[in-house]
Length: 125
Image (cartoon, rainbow, N blue to C red; front, side, top):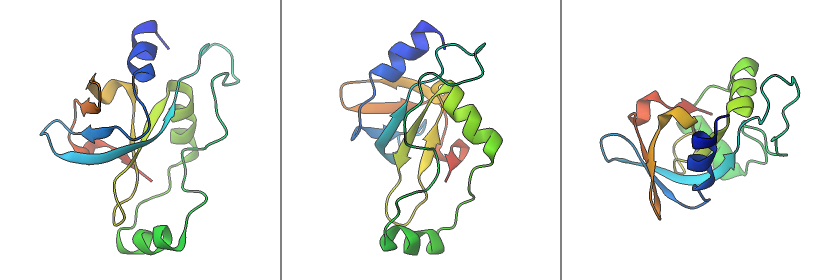
């Protein structure tokens, strides 16, 4: 991870609103995972206990998943997200969570994350 990417990711906090390229609200930041500090080392140094998958779900989450089914992320994508970092976005009750990679972030202000892509380009859980 380069220093500029880490600086941008470090500005993001849980609860911030996320807007896509068109100014449409995607959801709110649920979790931030910084990227791997040393990509030459096969182990991920900056990992946390939370995985970029759907875990610890409530019955409401399960019901919403039935109404708006999303695909589970393939293991290769999970590893890529862990290595390079991601932001998990709660898109609401009837939508799957979204994952934002560092290169999809156009800017971070005091209370808002603005993306360089529209919502359809984001990974879904």
